[in-house]
Image (cartoon, rainbow, N blue to C red; front, top):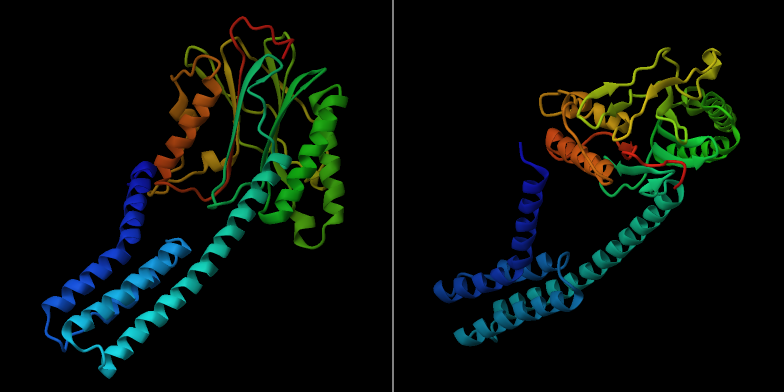
Length: 375
């Protein structure tokens, strides 16, 4: 299995070879023409050079390659004394025509690249607006978050995270909206907006979950067709009260969070009473109940979406974060970021460089001896 780093080096070498190919073709054409009888022609090599340059070179460089090919053809026919022959004139006109077409192709490719870069900038701005990166220190806690898109050049999909310091403690959510595309992004915006408001106003974490349920129900009524019937969001909501060494969790159909203690011991935070995802309240009503767990100094809470736990290797085996992280420690204020960097790199190696689902990761660490009443 080739690692992501090895794959990146291979791609870099291939690109370097392709970029050098136009000049190599011109040189090969000259050598071929000089070393073979007059009946043989290197015209295909000279015409290929500007065409290959068009998608990879600048406009000026592409034009220079075209001029170089044309001058090489003219010089070779001048050397052999066949400049005025019909075949020679036809060959030169062919190379010149292809060189002109190559410059036009270059302009089209450059405009497409500019449009793609603009789309990427817009997508990046949308991600920062909808899913802003949390501060590294919130409510006295060390925080790190990552969003890894499965699709190349995609910036945001249906996964989400929010960390917010409130009068009730630091409250956070990690969720996964069913579906893809703009519909999922719209639902992400609804969940994040409802959470930010409810986290400030509601006295309990259970009440926050119910506010999200109602917000998604309203969103579902505005949608038509299948998505309105089946739409849902799996989520973990957590509350870390100021000054208390505990964390309260409400799990709505989401992968179980992990608690990594400072000495490397790991605990899977399973829900006492499993609950359906948010947005499925029409299937039944029941009160949310938060589970309270000790959250000692030096410990770290990890919440993630199923893009992590369902990442498969070439044999179809899932990546198991609980099995991989047991016994490992990530000390210091940079521990959360180091943990997430380790996870993303291990998943990349596990899958051979690519995943089939987006992955959102959030790690929160209680510093030893820190007063988390201040941020």
